[in-house]
Length: 118
Length: 396
Image 1 (cartoon, rainbow over the protein chains, first blue to last red):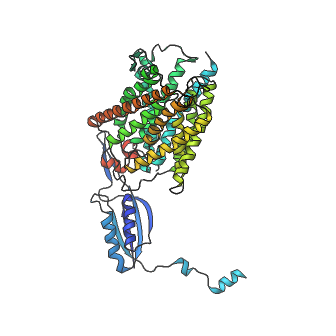
Image 2: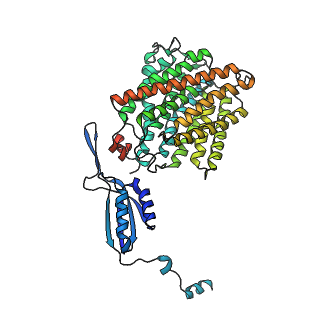
Image 3: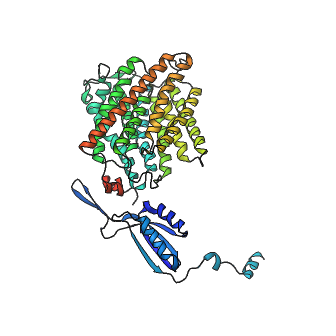
């Protein structure tokens, strides 16, 4: 089991999500983040003065997948989030030890439930 | 001098001033967060620039001694020797009231460009636009120009303010082009409460805008106040009902309809009775809703809908004045009371306003675009105008 952490352009989020959906990858956590890469953001000329806008808005997707699905997942993200310009983002993959569903593990046992009702 | 008239004109001038940031907030809520500050700032820049333009040349071109009914003369340049009284109020109160109208008109026009224009080009554009388009139209209708001589009615600026800014926004959107990614990426409104607050400020200011246009504290002013509110409510409920068929009606739809109703009643406010105002608002809501749907279908990026609401609502309002005007309110009657002549005059005035505003704006925008360039670079657009043009963020 692996965790995929992808940092992409915010405007590509909807299409990436749609493509992952068609691959059968439905669960994900998304956050709005700001960041910079090798180019350190975008530099603009304003009246001859350079302004550097580093820390551009990005979206971070966190997806946990089975090893068998991993390659498909990262290929889809890379293909769909791609524009070819600096700032397309990065994908990190890391191992996951266990995945626990709170709804299942935290469920009260029969005795506990009986105690609540009494 | 009537102190009552004077105090009402000064009060309503201040109410109209509040419409400027009102428009700004209304637009700001509908754009993405990277342009949220610019949307408000541009309306205030317009207020500032027009304040100065109005002293230098604007008032004279609009209200100076007419040159063949086309444009005002240069006899009031620098606001010298403007006389003491106009009607029952000091001339300076009239000048201030008229200036606020010019500022609001420019604020409305920023609809087309708030997300992709260079600040410097915007300033040049609004100086040219107020001088060449707004002052000319204000002269035609209110300054003793040819439309006034003809007898076309425009109580508070349906042609001068709304048709002119609406069709100017359309021309400007066509020259400047779509935002990058328009129609491909979601561009959701970033803060709808802002838009509602802006609309509420507009509604408040509009009561002064229409009622103050009576240029006195009298029965016509009170009638204008009353019918303005009725038409706003009627427009709002119509738009809401129409959009309800497609899903939840949305508060954005409610306020858009209110603005449509306010635009529709603007030229008519001093001439129609309350029941007519109900009808004017309802039709205005429907017309503007249809215009907005058409604009979306054509995927034209005039996304804050100054054309659909102010332009098309202004056309309907002008015609409605020629239909519903009644001598019981003021000394004019329209089609409903057997006066087809007035209706035809209204149609002529509307046609002149639409053609002149669209063509002149298109030409001015093209010239500014070819000389200094209207649009920001792709990178500047990507990071947003707040950072690239103002060097600030709306939200840190």
